[in-house]
Length: 453
Image 1: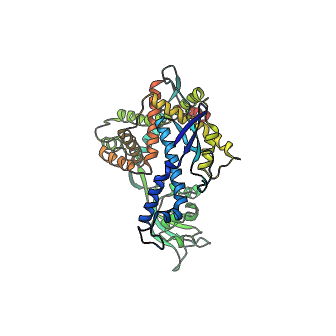
Image 2 (image 1 turned 90 degrees about the horizontal axis):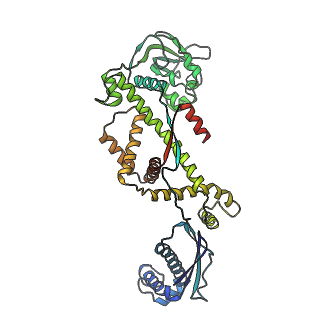
Image 3 (image 1 turned 30 degrees about the vertical axis):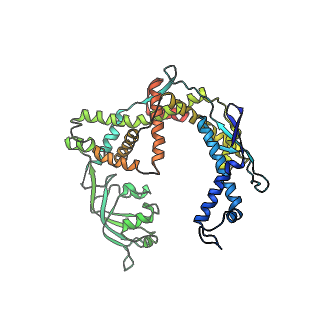
């Protein structure tokens, strides 16, 4: 087998592969014999089919398959031996059926899309803005309010409050407002409603000012926003019956449960941040501030990543790409693409492709590698955030590590995690390598910067 290479330009390479019968004949015979041993062929005992019979029945298909496999293997071997950085896959110049009856020698051509040569510099001569978001007292107060409510106590109250639960007998009403009676009437001896979660806020307002012993007329269907699951739960009926509920109900208030915020004491500090981490109000507010800063830093990093990408593309994005070959490759991978619409689609992927090439060059320049320890550390952060969403902010390291390992073991999610870790390491390395133009801004100003980016 003879392979010759012809470079049309710096990023386009055409391989010409000439195949002689000696390159494939022996493998064709091996494949035919294998078929004879493993296949049950009508009219023959298994393993007792002559080579001429096998050749007559399967010769053309086997020969075609062997030649195509040998040619593609030769192309990939050439790529590997010559250390070519190929974008996409080698593209056959022409796809046609082999004329095996009249020819023993064949010529194939493949176009290779080569990645352009890049030399991305990442050093202190490059400056990129980095915006720290100021943590205001209002942010700390808001988070403090949320924590104290979350770890507060539910106690009996005399009058309805915004976040109160209301208990009592719930009775279905007739259209004239009287209590419906009879076997088909819906009556809940001891029900409970949470007006704070009502979809229709007008229904929730009907509870304002109500006290134990008062009665409230409200519409469960409107309160639940037509959600049959909510209606069935509220009235303790099945979904089929809930679908027929349209009228008003009367709730006779027997108990109002209100939330009293937790006090700033050792028990509360432990519930929020774990044992022996916060000991007084000053340390607590500082810990809350640092927690908010950590969360906001993710937003700062995201904007920095966008600015870094923009700067690198502006500096190195004017690169030559093998457009024609890449378009053909995209068409071969997506049945919805063709010669009429490929130009529009190619514009969408071109910038992402350039950025991918720049990222790979940066990673090589900075000698970045993704280790298993990096993946575990990232998964632990994800696990801790998931626990925090449910108010569990002081989970022990063993539990978080075990949960993180479960995330890593998910074969469907792991590739996405590897990509996220790779991007995080790259942007962190860039942040350390370049000069940061740091500025502290308010949250509102930061939102303006994001909108303008």
